[in-house]
Image (cartoon, rainbow, N blue to C red):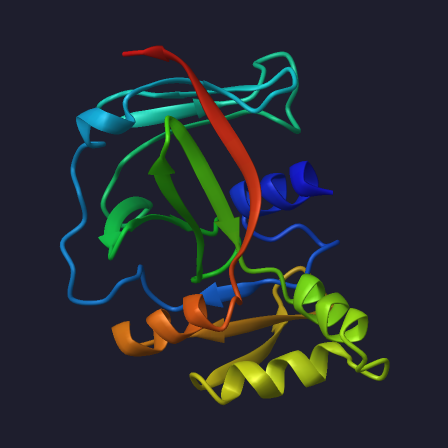
Length: 194
């Protein structure tokens, strides 16, 4: 499941997950980094067969012989932007199908990258596990709206599915982290420097 969540994050919006989209790269009023910091550059393993290679200006994830688990991107203003937010780095990637951004927060500590993702289905299941057996996506959206306004619109390619789009201030983004809308989906372990 964790691998599927990460792939969903990287692919931005797969139909099987209910995700949060962002109107703009986050955090707001923060310069995008033009290069990955030196401490992040290297080769990482997800503990299975896939690797993540971070270079100065881009990254490659997965296996080139697999279209599902392969992604090769460079930092580029307006398409793929990296920003720092407190102890996190946030990779912002613009959706090819809509004018919204998907984000992948991660933190580097103890020689590994901890990758996070906001999946509303996960929030719903956590509410159910904690006793709210009637929790639905609407329940989660109501909680999300207590932190930041949410625009709900039909997905461009499927009118039955919805995009939940936010444009949080930096304080609201901080609250999203504090209220655990972002959950850890995977660890990448460094196997080689540069």
